[in-house]
Image 1 (cartoon, rainbow, N blue to C red):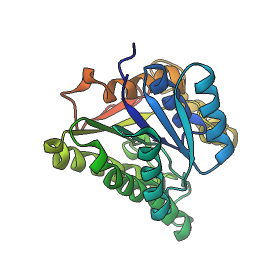
Image 2: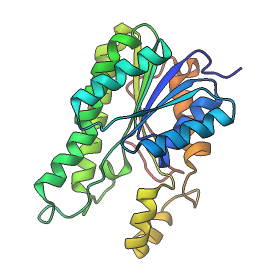
Image 3: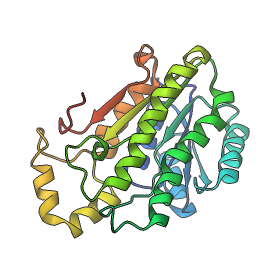
Image 4: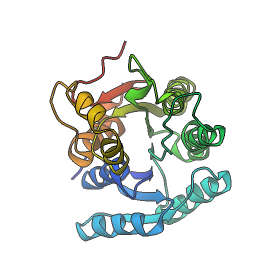
Length: 251
């Protein structure tokens, strides 16, 4: 028996990295998981691994920048599983570069894949989640670090997601839907790429983590999401939770 038995969870960007780790953690606790991603093979491989370990998982292809694909995704998930009670908004195109160097189309893509897609997915899922729903959106320490130089576009998108999280938590509490955010820090393909191109900055950043290491997507980030989606957190909503080894101090 898992703490999420009987729940159906939709996770975006679930084919790799943090999304994959979260999906595996939710499935381990009994949730039936809908894995969404742009690359079919990645989400299908993850779904196959979960099924091989005794879980219930199905892969869905979706580019969250496209509103029509979002509507189809939510409809397909409900049709396949019969219900939907958990949404994890993880998909996000990363945007790096100083403000004077950042191309407008890249900035817009970050906003479209981040806060706009998060808003669309929450709205599309809302009718299916009333009464006992839980949403977890992904923010980032980039939005609260003392110096966001070089990460302003990404940080802006992630902070917009946190504002949407708090707003939905307040507006939808009467509908029986809790909405929280996490600020994760874990090894992922995008982070590994950043470490390769910025090795000195990466070493300095890791040195600021009190626990002295990067998190594991399934063992460190996943359980935090499980908690926020379970009855164990039934009195928590509108909260932003850093899951980062103590690196961020929220004020």
